[in-house]
Image (tube, rainbow, N blue to C red):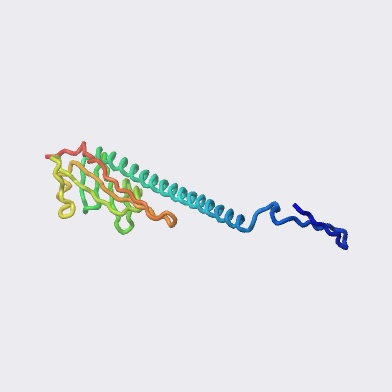
Length: 193
């Protein structure tokens, strides 16, 4: 290795090194490659974080829908088991007689809600419904035609089943939905002639 020194007017020395020796530090190419790799890793981490947040929001929506369905089915089945009579105003409105008092269950298709009215107080049991259907059955298990003759079906209804669809929309996660079908609730206190 050859080192050449020269005395400058300011008494500074300039050291020139031969072409084979490299100074410490990174080249522009190395910095660009490291920056690109870092950007890819950061993008992957951010994408994973966003995906996990979306999944967490969707799980929260499913839990909320499940809780609504569980409360609805628990309240309805409790009333149905204790009911001594069932009367249908239409295929979406059922009046149960529970301990001598009227309890009305109604699906409102314009608001997509299912509610319970008892003693003049209305409680919304579920909202965000995408579908709803009552099914009524005789003591033999034969389904009753609620769409064509709901009033006549009330006299021989011994079992009732509910099926409903729930949905929730969120701007970042999109739509989540759930379909629920209850067991057949037997009107234990209703006498069938």
